[in-house]
Length: 381
Image 1 (cartoon, rainbow, N blue to C red):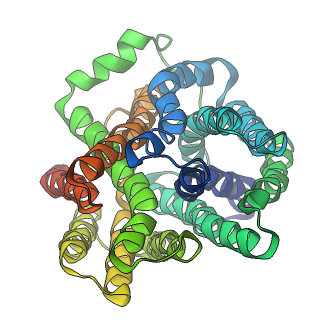
Image 2 (spheres, one colour):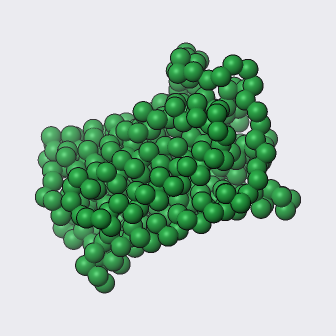
Image 3 (tube, helix red, strand yellow):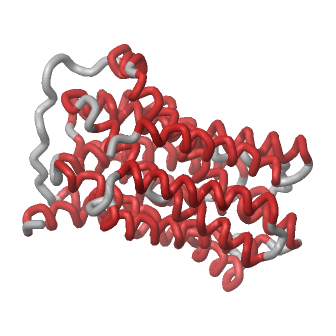
């Protein structure tokens, strides 16, 4: 990798780190659930305020990129994310946190739609999947740190929300870095993107199946983020401050998986690695039904984190290579799939309240993993 590419990738990878702030919604929701005495169904509605915006703004962001460019769209997304981190400093009540979650979702939508295609202007070919996986590695680091910072702040200062000013300060780094970095972007070819053109891509069966793959991938991600601590609290009667580390276990192994995936995907086929990842998750979900001890449950959570770590970059890179001339539209559509973070956690909350056990959420989780197994035959080697 030459110096020019490295220089361009540094602020981009910091932006991927900030992208990971969206995963604080899991641990934050668990604390808010306790603080405001919410049911599972109501508490699991909170992530909707983050992931709903992926459904609403993903395609418009693709259109916005066509007008102002990918780099400027990423910078805008970072500024909105910074505002999301600052909002909880004003007050702590349910409405303020909903506003913060909404800003976080809007900023993250813009970021995910624009940042991945921006990488295609820096690297290309067989290095794209590994570069996207490297970005997911940096994203996973932030996801891993959020529960740890929240637990530390809760223990030391009786205020888990200290993680917000910490993340706000970090958000400034890629804003400045990308503002000072020049990245040559490929001009948009052909006619300008339209809503009809973006949604019309779903008529392509391969695009549709990959889109659903993103939906269930994010459903697993957010679902485990929310459910893992509650599962430990239910099975082992643990306090939230201790059970919250289950989320860090998930994201630790997600981080490890992203890091290793950067190298593995440059050596073996995407299809074979995708199958291995799904098998890890199958074993883990079965274990969550069977085990009632801390270490086995941690191992299951770790396996899901490792297995789910490379699903997104593999699916996304497959989608980006289907229709290269319409990458902005494809990216917007694929990131719309992140709205799975709205749909599946809500289903998990309803299932848990209906069955009066967190195993209800695990049933929904199993369905998501089953779809990824089906999707394997559509992943090209």
